[in-house]
Length: 252
Length: 361
Image (cartoon, rainbow over the protein chains, first blue to last red):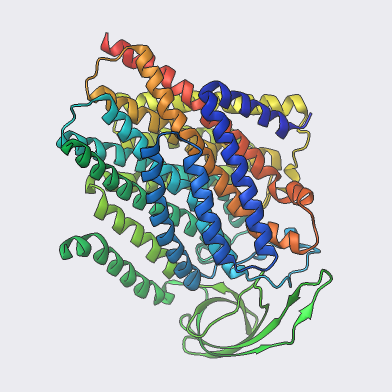
């Protein structure tokens, strides 16, 4: 039997056991996002402007990721609103980064992979670099916003008589903790995915200056830092929105 | 209001810009030759069509460079640069950019663009905004924790090189344990919450990789193509697991950390909770984040494969071939991570309910 298929079956069973109906919805959401990404890649390879395709698909992917993963309307609305604002700022930042950093395409380390391929494909790979940076931070942004709104919501729900001061101190504590763990996730993600490349650099005696200016490693690093900035914006904005909501409810 | 914007945005951005300017002029720090593109001429050849009907144009550039360091500082050289307009490899240079060179005999060869200024500016921007928006103590601890993790990582790399990778899995698993302990201790302090999160993370990791290794052994790696792993300098399947352990660990720690944060928040509210209440609340928080956490990993993995997928599509390949060459290992890692994230929910909720419930009684 195919290993990937068996792992997928195990994942589906576990998801259904742990989160039942929601698990099913999560899987459905992932499946839709998989299709969206395939569609996005196809549209780009057909020559549509990658940045426009990116903007549209990013909004759709965020919508699916957020609305398919939780039922509570208030949580998902705040998370979605937050993510959209953050997405817009990340897109601008990514374009700026690409202008100065020029992270496009493949490098000399990829030579083996590119053997026998035509490289004159007429697609703007500079735009694709922006797509990679934005798409890879998308998940982290949605996750940070969701986690903050959900945790804060849970705490508020459990204690109906909470004061604003209590709320603010909870907001600060939970924000810091989610920020810490989410940033660590991205950091470990980068280390895990670049451990091979780094060993390659060291084994082949690259100069430090070549490593620190390497297109591949610096592109990964840029994606990671962009994701971290996204998490930071998301936590601050989502916390601000939840606090407004809390004040409104407290007045009623 | 102005003070708010000044403190939160304008100062961090100004500092980042200053760092950019300073780092842009750091050629004297380099031992290898660095040059600035003083002027250039570009010539675009007529469109050319490849075997798959793709139309692209070749750009021939002549770069007039001035060396910025080494004893030959100030010397002017002229170098050619040939690149396709799509920039699948190489890049189209602009005037004013700085590039790294390698001396070859009497001439020079282009290594690539100097990217340190933009990267340092981005790093500074992140640190500045972090300090502006998060309490100074917390952000300083977080940055210190990342710095330390980077040091452990460099240590592990050095050890792995020393031992010629004979114990790669062991070294990087230990590195993982160190990562979790150190990161959690910095975010949460040496508290009960840290200890519980640590145990939940390690337990989930062991279960996840036990399960994954079991499945791979049972199916004899059927359908898994370790041979397509990039930048391999040692046994690819072993190497896949080294990367996977480090990446998956972060995601599991994230899930565990979020659930524990929520549950300890409830404990701080001094609500009268039974074990079952804690377990249910844990599951409820967990259910909300399973979807988005799997989405994070899924997005990172898909994003990385976009350029290669586009290139392969334009080379007349279909999705099933791309699935084998470009998506296979990423998919395997995403599946393992997702299983880890889902397992983290009952493990964390269960552990928390046992320990928090007893502490209360």
